[in-house]
Image (cartoon, rainbow, N blue to C red; front, side, top):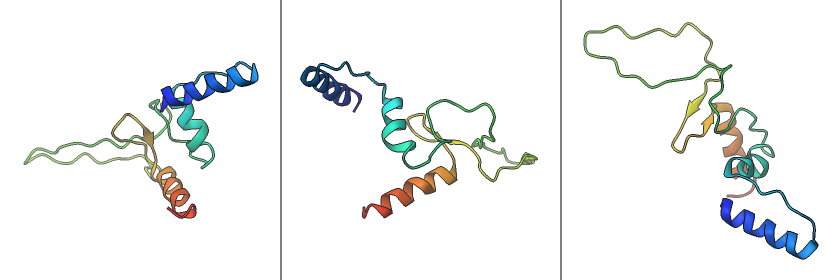
Length: 101
């Protein structure tokens, strides 16, 4: 995606004579998908100021750890390193369904 997008920018620059800014995949994703959908708590950087839900394994005979903090909007990391929240993922699902997908 990044290579194709930047190739398109190079072509636009060539046709218009106006220099275009080349973007990383994270910048493209943010500009074209996350920001239009209002997914402001989703991205590739691990947030420092949020509740992070972490998977864990509890060994037999051990007590589970209780979580004291409020986790109504926890951060989770999926495949590929993208951090998100359930609320942002619902915005993505809503965006798909509203477009008739």
